[in-house]
Amino acid sequence: MKNVAIFVHAGENELGRAVHGLLYAEEINAAGGNVKLIFDGEGTLWIRRFEDPSHPMNPLYKKVKELGVIEACDYCAGAFGAKEDVQKANIASAKDNQGHASIANLIAEDYHIITL
Image 1 (cartoon, helix red, strand yellow):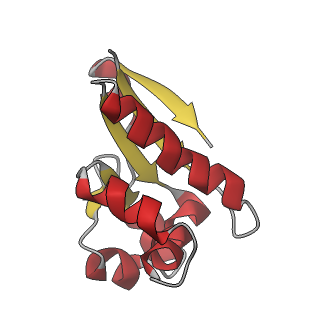
Image 2 (cartoon, one colour; image 1 turned 135 degrees about the vertical axis):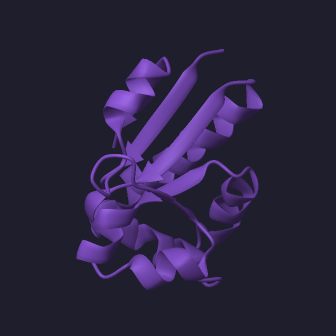
């Protein structure tokens, strides 16, 4: 199985994209792949929503979170007002490219890139 990095840029009205990021990460991990699920841009806002126990996708989110594969763009979390939520959720910050996740580093590490 390959290395796969899934970038979730989904906006607030794109629940399907955000949920599919979780589903794909879970599936790739279960198949033995090395996966990173990176909430980027406006997608960083999903951390707060998925952390909410009343959100219908919270159980799936918690399952994927327990895998230790979720990261969030540090710069974007700050820009979209989600930095405190990301920190409170104990989500790792991706910040290798001037505060952003580094897609070049991931490609150099042989990751396939999926954007949602």
